[in-house]
Length: 319
Image (cartoon, rainbow, N blue to C red):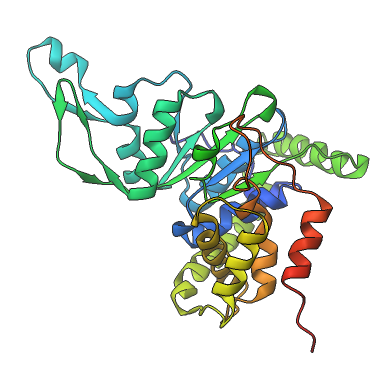
């Protein structure tokens, strides 16, 4: 079910914190070529709440959601069981096609690290190629073009994703619990106020939140519209390659995501050119999961030293 009852989803504008995840979602919305978002963090850090709020803001619908324990048929498509029992073989679309046809054009996978690697690999391959090919016993179909953004969440305490799968996500956003008491208080106040106000008919508070959500969507849609006019800087390719090499990124996908994410950020900010500053600010989510690592699937920690290295490689322009 992708249409919630009114007032059940916290408005995007009422979220407190979540800056890294929100920026990653907005970048991917503006430039879908970035390749999706993986939100990683402990339970209870509002990863799902943020993703649902973002989908409601941009599409007025929840994203198509892949549940834990989903079968091949549910993901890829199969046969309508009732029709099959009546002797009629009628195909039924799977979640990948549903996501491509949905208003949000998003497939959300909660706890993706607990999903069978076989299915994760198929999903990520479809996201990468934009092509769905179903060739299985009992069903074969022509190639289908599918276009959607993959957004996943995971709790690293419950296991990781293989590096080959991590690499297929465009950006990784780390979501950590707030330690500051004042920030925690703001979170509690925001949620409790929302729960109270949704019981108020025609709540002015929620109406104002909806108005801010509408304005935010308009800003992101405008950024989408001007993305094509944003030019890469003369040093963008060299800067991306230098960062990726310094962090020993495996393969070249990270270099490309850096440039694409930097361009989206420039579009969001209304800048005509991708600068080193844009690349600096997307370096962590674009590279943190792509550094040389073991096969354990654990996500390497991004440290203050990493930030310092990025700043050294891409110094701030003077004047």
